[in-house]
Picture 1: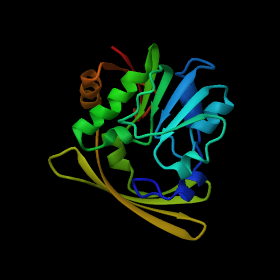
Picture 2 (picture 1 turned 45 degrees about the vertical axis):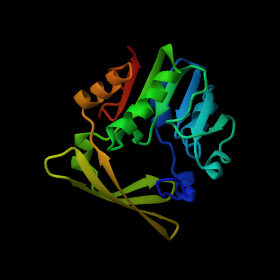
Picture 3 (picture 1 turned 180 degrees about the vertical axis):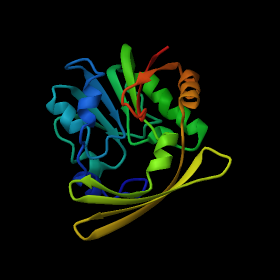
Picture 4 (picture 1 turned 60 degrees about the horizontal axis):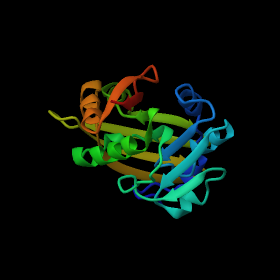
Length: 213
């Protein structure tokens, strides 16, 4: 199980889809990539196959053991200090939407500490538009089906999420609280650690590009 309660089996089955191609559009060809919260290598593997030099970081050793072709580092994101800089730093899986502002700052500080002067930080986030459309049943590919219920808390940016995943007759349930980040809030969080929101990478604004300020 991952620290947030998701089974490794589930993450191993989920395909990366079009995300690696999207990320590649913002990363220097053949460049170095730091994948924070890499999991089982869902993004790392296709990036390695595309010719990038990938360093994958996560906590659970049973997930890191499944990653091939990339350097692996067992660490929390907050504590990571490699003393190296990368052409691209990835903060995927909506980790930036953690409700605690200080925790978010710690994650982004690690991004800032490892991105090259001319590099990019690629961040995946939940947006307000996602909150309005996420509830329901979705085929995620790889035999994985999700059923999600999103419940915004009145008067706040906090959102309670209940998700159930099925794979091959097995079912897992996962509940968590996240915080929606619009451009203004994310921009402020990035500025706090010396980064700047440069542009949306995806049309829906869920992937964004940040650069050193």
